[in-house]
Length: 443
Ligand SMILES: *Cc1c(COP(=O)(O)O)cnc(C)c1O
Image 1: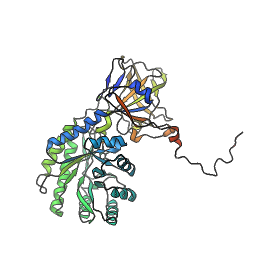
Image 2: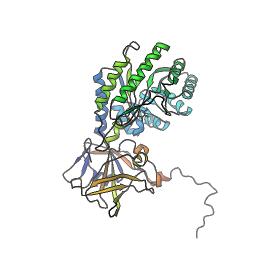
Image 3: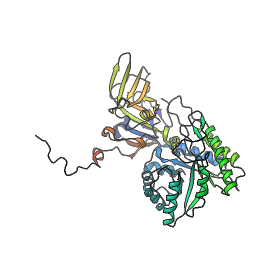
Image 4: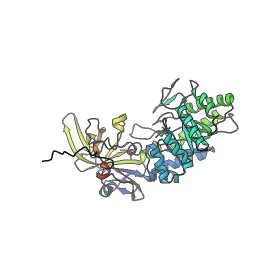
């Protein structure tokens, strides 16, 4: 397994992250446990911010909180000078509870409810990324009712879909998100939005995909959004002060993944904006981007304890751990690949190929197919790398399994930022109606 950030193997052959030996993290916090390398998270934030500083352009880097949204994380990115994207009332509530400055919160989503819109206006968030006409009208009406003027971007689909190693140019975009540039709906939306008395149209937003390893998709998106901005400038005399090019910067899950340095994405984006937006309006727009996975993804490691094994001679050896699709649904959902390490005997040679199974009642509850490890026994500790993004945030209580805790580690100090769920948490919302259970057949 590739060792990210501060991860090392110590003299005892134990995995150590943030100066903390994972065998003692197990003693203190139990397993499964999400471990976050705090220094690596801060380093990723700084890579984005520093790269933008060097461009000399105005910018905002908004952490896409859906990747991992808890109070400590909101405050950490705040401290690093980032803005914050939210997609629901729950994420907004978390950010506000944490004390994140509302003016640096951006609200996304293709179906914001009137209640969510009202909550966000009342909180005086910085910007709504408007996805469709229904939302545009609701937002105008609610803002007018409150006598407020709210900042908006319009989400557009530029007809670029970025995948890991290439982008696909799609003429007409078949997507649930945003206004299509190609079919004229984006133009109509700009016309309408710029005439609404309670909406301040700052600019455009485009997000072309995730786990992207090349810059060309961003360059083509910037070019198309710029061509559209030019058309709007000439046709409607509307000038955009903000261009948001979304997130999707790739990270390393396995050795097959070859992400670029953060600075290379930023440099390419800034150059494209400089080139294509030159001459549209009096000055270049401010660039906003929205990294999620690339801020927190490779800083996370999940620690499990090995339980049972099943060796089918000539076929496969299954090694079961005390978590699974409940704490990491990505392999089951997307066939996502991960690497693992025997964290209590990390120095030993790898002598067998095994597959890592979760403990849920689903044959599809597999975390890793075919990983090379030293001989694995009951009680060993297994570490799975790059689980910081879309793991805790997608975790469930399937099989009524308690969600693990999350610990931030730095300089030998381990601090819980989410405590592990308790049995009480599991039944907290259960109610039993009066008519049920009165005639229990108890002998
Ligand atoms: C999910 C999402 C992001 C973040 O994507 P990552 O792949 O985690 O960087 C950014 N912007 C929007 C609009 C998104 O939906």
